[in-house]
Image 1 (cartoon, rainbow, N blue to C red):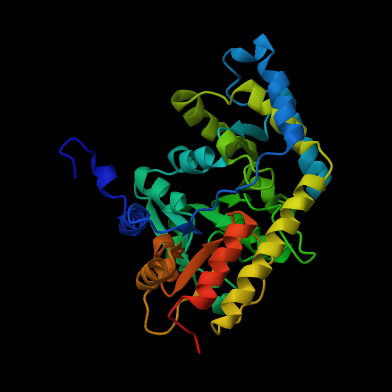
Image 2 (image 1 turned 135 degrees about the vertical axis):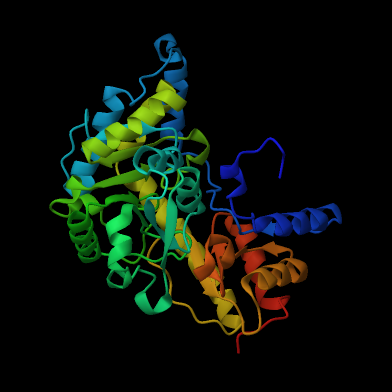
Length: 392
């Protein structure tokens, strides 16, 4: 650790992908054709109608000035309209909607806005690493909520000790889930809202994959639950449904008090999103559902391709109902890191070890379906034919 680094930096856990990254680089240097199924970054271009709006917005000189911190009135209204249309949830665009430079910005800064040193934050395990790291940066104490197969990868709310609930300030949730691809229903959110209201816990629902769903399943919003706006905010992103990861545009909606506190962090640490990007995002939010339907169909087809290859290895898995990931058990005798290394060495395919997402991720690995279909098919062929590992 650098002699200049702060104590909070030293609390960041080791990056378990680092050694795998080195081995991947060595294989590439040796001339191997490496296919990465490790990162959840959509490979398809942003749809034409969104890019066309961006081109026009860039040519408007009025968009080149500092944007409003909370987002333009038009963007916040578009988000409110989307929530009314999609979920039947009414939002005040002035107080209950705020634009973000990608939802990650708001998720990470939320702990700074709500958590004092020593406060408990309820963190899903395995989960998106930002939840835990943001908690540590704010001086909070993460309390792991194991996401286990026996509970359909939902946290067991009844198992949280009362003394932990009394000290908890914030609960992070994420469905459809990264990394497990699990989903939830409104009934689960009803239990969450009841618990949070009883113990005065703020809830941060991460709905980044809300439009990536399959088989007739529709992901709910926590704000559909009566009383949810008393304690909850929800983070949304245009990255996944519209292939806009590089654009960095998202939003937070819900409890006005929580959003105001987050806004204080935002106004002091960054600025608003480029107005032209907001205008392109408005076009995306107001478009008919064809673009989202196309994304859903593409990932469903890719699911099927990969699941068929895994069945040849003896691994039977039901198609997930949400996200563009597969969360799969490692074969007997392998840790998740050792298995990821074996896959890389034997097939030149990168998969993510489950332990990188938290202690309860051990014994699993994650496959991302965000590569071109032809490359995914090649990866599937290698796993089926070249991987010297079997589940049966």
